[in-house]
Image (cartoon, rainbow over all chains, first blue to last red):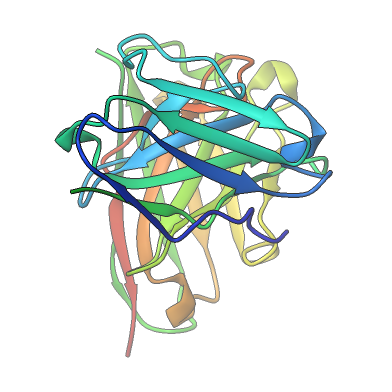
Length: 110
Length: 121
């Protein structure tokens, strides 16, 4: 199962907003509202920041939001802060009963 | 406290086998599905496979690159899950994480710190 496509990198200054896209197929991202997003920091375990396309786990700031249109899911971070820097991955449940991660996006806060 | 801790990683020769363990605490182990995810050096996250909870049949699913070589099992009495890896190649060199699937959300809410596997001669 091919990985959903994400931009390799995005960057912005503190206080600005960014959006990371995750483009898959009708068999994964487009198959339902089962897309999640993870922040991966070096030498740390991933942390879920969005699940079921747009739901935020307890403790995740309102600055993080998710959406989906067709086969593309998006993660938006508003009011960027230095601590948001890291690698972001989308992940989707697939019609085959498996999961697939996107290829990841490196966020740099300038 | 809800925790998952992986163990069993290390250096292994190509073609050999290795078993990773994921020991859990702080939650009712047999009611959650458990997943394995890996990250090779310089690469992204890769879903490896998972084991359904007992209510869902306790059956596994695997990603294509490991299907037929890897097997996931669980011991509910020991609150542990295992990743049995056979026929290892350098492509399997990675940090391996176990993760709990949050109930019904198809997302991974709790992760272990990971265990490193290096396949090299």
